[in-house]
Length: 296
Image (cartoon, rainbow, N blue to C red; front, side, top):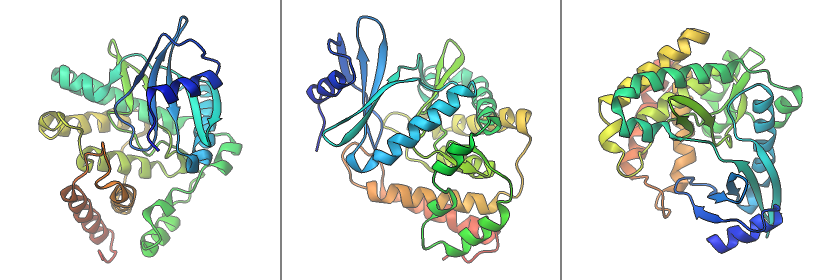
């Protein structure tokens, strides 16, 4: 079922926003529908989930509450509801623009923004995680898929720490910037608790392998993509140090990306190509070999 602006207004009425001045669908978001909403007092983001994403919506609320309590720049949740079996969140609108757009407009800022992204990522990994949230979030290792038994077993043996908060979708479209400051981290749908190297590997795989939105290829597919990753690594390392023994985690990140994106191939609004999936498979196989696992 497609959602339209009229549907959004119905959802908003159930959330207490009865007379919005402006409602506009926002591009982006392959798994949920998002609108920018303005009323007389504030600007909001309305996020509407699919019916089968009810538990995801509840987890995301819990993660955002924990992130806010830890002082992280996450959008505040003002209200939630269920409309025609679809969960919905009304959140504060994060000021600014995605880091990707800022880099496209001002490429000379890529190093500064990349370092800031790395430092903020490290802050996420240093944030306290309430025990109730640890019990609520899904396991990260299983996201490699049922077929990756050997990889999952090796990761279980390497994952001995209590675990940190993992975003698992940390990239330049999900980090907002305004006036040079990072103002928000969006889209916590994949959040989990575990080894920080998994989150680092996930970001590396997104920066190197994820299909870019139309119009972005000339920027991040160029040297700026490399510079952004290097700067992010420097920023992260200044706070938490350089991660080590990454091969297993890179293999896991590649497997997770394939498993996550392959079902989306051919969907309207999804800029994924078969060549993108082939690159992900080659990445995963390479890192499996380096980790001492059979690549197939």
